[in-house]
Amino acid sequence: MNRSTGVMRMHLRDKFSYLILPWIICLGSFAINLIVGGLVQEEKGFYSGGIMSIFIYMLVTGIVVVPQTIPFALGLGVRRSDYFAGTASTLTILSFIFSAMLTLFSWVEATTSGWGIKLGFFHLPYLFNGSHIQEFFVFFLIMLVMSLCGFIIACFHRRFGKTGTFTMFITLFLLGSLFSLYMTFYADWMAVFHWFGDKTALDLAVRTIPFSIIFAALSYLFLRRSAV
Amino acid sequence: MSRIVEVKGLTKVYGNFEAVKDVTFTLEENKIYGLLGRNGAGKTTVMHMITAQQFKTSGELKVFGEEPYENNRVLSQICFIKESQKYPDNYRVIDVLEVAAMFFPNWDQAFAHELIEEFRLPLKRRVKKLSRGMLSAVGIIVGLASRAPLTIFDEPYLGLDAVARELFYKRLIEDYAEHPRTVVLSTHLIDEVSQLLEHVMVIDQGKLILNEDTEVLRGRAISVGGTTAQVEEFMKGRNVIHRESFGGLLTATVMGTGSTDDRKQAESLGLTIAPVSLQQLIVHLTGGSVRKAGEA
Image 1 (cartoon, each protein chain N blue to C red):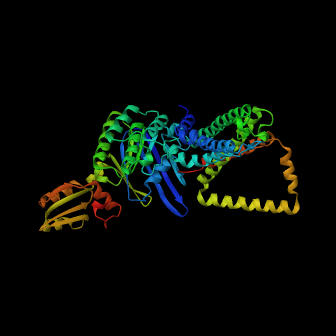
Image 2 (image 1 turned 90 degrees about the horizontal axis):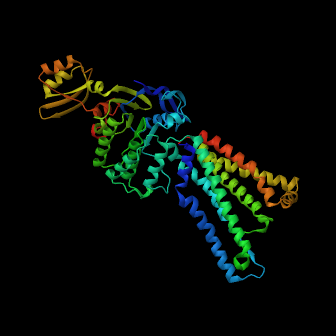
Image 3 (image 1 turned 90 degrees about the vertical axis):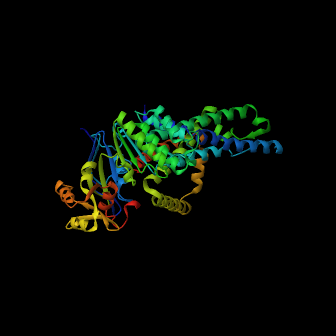
């Protein structure tokens, strides 16, 4: 049997963590919004950011999956490259399925005019932008880049340990501060905001693709040199 | 006989600490090896390198004739069970078995379930909630049922009771007879496994200090008993690793070549000769003279 498929099946055996818990969190947030929406009965309707929970969950999944499973996988004689392929595929498939479900919920929300109470939880005008297909790709690409971002953090930690990870975050923080200082004194923040403001959600989502690719490639390189 | 593992000048350095120093040995097909040594001697590091879980600093390493790193032909033939093995938090015993079945080509699921019964493991319980002994049993079951051509057990029975340990030895030897393979056992309980081991390697402070067939090793020392005067006479000029007196009687363990000359002299002095336990020998060889054999 193909050993990277084996890695995927190894991940998905833990159905609760990967399939059930994210929806308990997301739908839990949805239920609360539904109750609040029903009580408030806002005339113009209201929007919630609760959908973010599932994106954050995928970021966390990307981080947690590695320390949870790599000692076990390598202990069973799995190659690092098979572990990488299996794990990256699992994250991609989960992002795909979750995005499809979010799109489906969005469609229901749109057709029931916000579950009868004008609630905007899944169906957000900026993300939707006219078509469900577009909306699906926005969900999928953002979820994918977030889970791979978690994955690269975990792989970096695996490779360079606590000290290395700490140093990396300090360095990133310093670079960010320098950039911010530079922008404030020598350039125009407004230009940046305008640049983002002009783009549709899909425009921005498509621009995450190179990041996803780079995150995945670097994760692989880190994993190749990591020991148990 | 074909060589399963060939290690030449293998060295592992952590910072400025040399965990494994210039170790050279070979493992042959279908034999049971004992890899012995005190805590922190470097046994686990050697095994981690053989299974490509750790990187060597220098030296040559061939497993089934190839480099093991990222090599499925090699890795699918090895099963390495270690005391410190971690399992995913939400995994139950059954999940461990099902996943292991996917990665070991010779896996025998029926045998695994038979062992589960014998070790009385709760299939549906989360691995995280198992007692230390039960956790060790999970590893042992995976190791046995994998039937991997190279099976390595590193301190497999922490917390396991005597009954379960006996069961492990029994099942290991039975299954080994039916499905011969190369087995490496690393343990502190030397006397318990000494009947199983065909070949013994001892690592001390990162160096391989002994690499010998068990039979040859046993012949290297003898234990003699008799009156104090007689035994003292025999001990003259000999390397005594252990002595125990009881009233006017004395028993001494003497290192030597175990040659027939030695035996003849002992017999002529009217001493009784007995074989020496492997554990005593190892304790002596690893410089454990301060410690008593029983504490090893």
